[in-house]
Image (cartoon, rainbow, N blue to C red; front, side):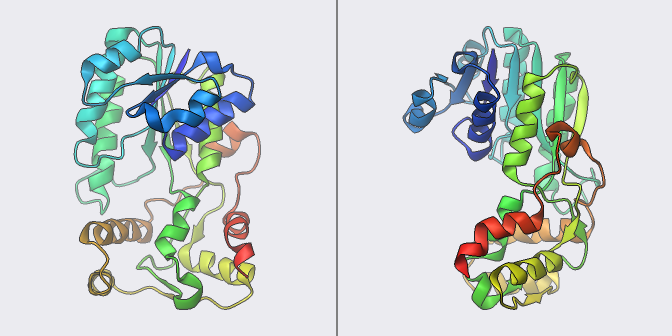
Length: 291
């Protein structure tokens, strides 16, 4: 029996869809959700729905009874992610879960000096507690989603261009669906216990290279400016962007600039059995209709 947490989110849903496509019966998949009302599409596919909350330990131990493989999709709660994950890992151990799989993040700098320590810190703590639990584990070091590029670029990218302080440094962006399919393959497969995988594209691209590809896709020149981090923050705040989002964009941009997401590992390609979707292919799918 496979349980997926965060099952109504993009990654959880995609992983479940791939499990179904690959022949896993819906009666062997459990979706852990906070709000059953949001799980109508999963229920329609025959998925077993169990309500539970990361803050409610008893709900987790109940949900995890009889579970062989538990996919912990990392919580989106940056403030208390570590506490929530601690409950999941402890409940999994108490319930006798046989294998826990965790969606972590790619990184190089594991110290507090990292520009994205507000994200990586809790991932590192979670990885440590999973390993300390004694439960066989698989950790996915997920790189940046290509799906986030349109969000970073903004809705008016074709008119206003791209304004991000990333410089020329490359990152191994990959699509969320490719990452989810690789995760599903591991859930279905064997021999993945106590392993860590770098879930990154085999292609590394910089933001200016992505902008050039976007220009080719839409058939017009898109401008790119890489400001200083200080000017970026000042400009975004003046434009009315909420401070928390400005901080997040600035942090990830600096992490890209420092090379945190550049890697040449081929785990994702190996787990997929094919080349991951490239940045150009992704951009074509998103922007070609906007020509």
